[in-house]
Image (cartoon, rainbow, N blue to C red; front, side, top):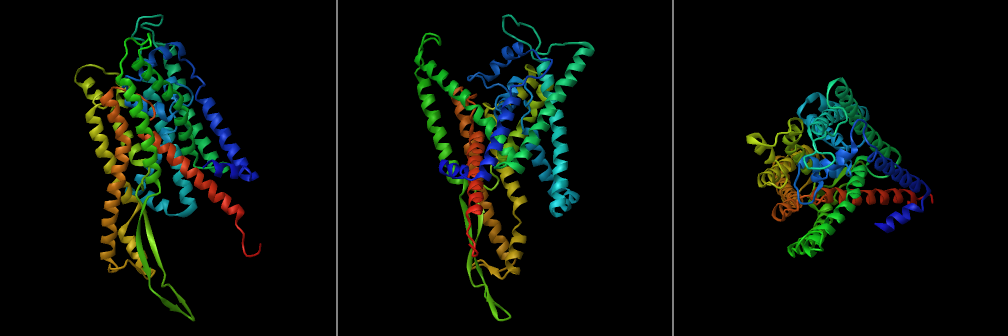
Length: 455
């Protein structure tokens, strides 16, 4: 990977693209520390500190958004909402393109249709950002410092009542929404003038920015095992927790790298045919089906669905009684959450495969091009054969995603260290984006070094 980056840097055009991408990442990180007006940052730091404690599960919604935003969410900065509204908007519009015939026709109208779909996605992103920003404002408004100290009983927002509070709330929500729109625009600029997928690059940068916090958490846990005088008596089990986490982290990276390019190849044989004085066909080929077809999308969509109760509780701030227990059940260290997470990942993996692959259409395309699968009759038998292979491959890919996503959660539920910030989902995003960006760099270099027959 480093050799590819070094070779790309030697090409002036690619060097400009890399520098532009790095510039956008720097702007993103600057926006992640710009404070939002009308919030008391001192009280905010005091109240949000328990939510980022390594031994507290906290709100799964907060942990999820905080990881994807590179820590901006817990600090309530300009980019606190991160790129999550755009991701959810893209998934929703993609699903609606299958369910609504008008959108399906629009998606098949070529470049003009894709531009219209992109415009709809942007407007939907702003709407989701507005809803999410409003929910976060109410969470901040309802959260007060619960521990004795200088800020005991104070509210995070500077204005707590009257017209001033309403005006401050409107400004805060609009700033959060504007930050989401700005991040979406920055991602599009990377697509036009930089390297890699813009949204994925911003996600990558946000997750990497959380790695120092993860290292700090690991050191703190190691100190718990050592009992260095500030953490009380020695607790040797924490040494084992740190070692297990590091081994698990390296194993997950290896598995993701192995599975990322894994595919099931269906052999295809094309019949010979004579057109005029020339003979076409007769060669063998294959139809590749990726094992991890949906990438991280099934995990993201499952997380988004399970975060809905947490989002609702941001408005209500219920902690006790039946509803308090109900909302707490959707905590990332709760076993009910883990089971539902596993089921939803499987469901969305199959659903995404159904959207991407149509066995009947694939069989018809093979038949029209005089292609057959050896030993399988054309038409309906070919479609059934492809459907069976898709079902088995999707099961393997879904189980792979579920294991990667759930192992860190199970580790957190068993050890009580559920807030180590770099989970399975984050690792999939980081590794996937890194591999995809390197492939794009390689293809760009190949285009610039290709020697044609006139050279």
